[in-house]
Image 1: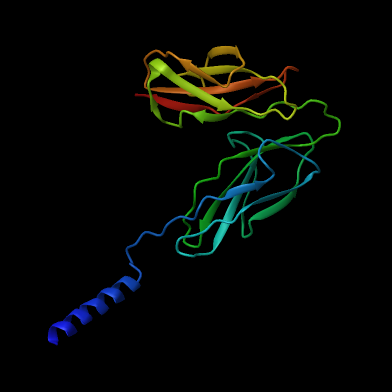
Image 2: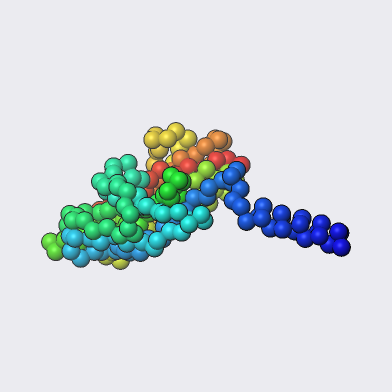
Length: 226
């Protein structure tokens, strides 16, 4: 009988300890928001644009706020709007014919912040515009800072044009950030395989041109030699 009481006591202590929160447990970040509207690579009607995204969840069930960032540069070097919002939506007036890039991250009550969502691109329709420039190219591979075989360096990207025209690409590549010579010119594919000289880190970006001569350029990306 004593053995049974001992086992029951130990079991109750174990259950009680499991039910208590571990004071040393790390508070986890919220999930990354999923962007809904404006849709990626879209032509938006009207200057009053509503941004919306799926609400994030927090592992500890804490209240969540959101940081919406809006830029006219694909690499977000120029921020037009950046504010903390308590709702998963926001409406603002934008400029006709202008290209915008947006992203959102979530923050819980303990100030733990998620990564930013992947960016989405859109342009506000201008009735006087008959042809729109392409959106800035987006990287497919390799990942940022990924180590790859530079004898067979595979680079891939995507690009979208609301006019659905044939696009041409130039690749700029070098070993110094911000000093990227033209490496590949005038191709119409969205991936290449390059045989590169020795180097520890390589920086690259893609410029796109449509048939009317309008251009856009990607952010600078980088990878490492394996």
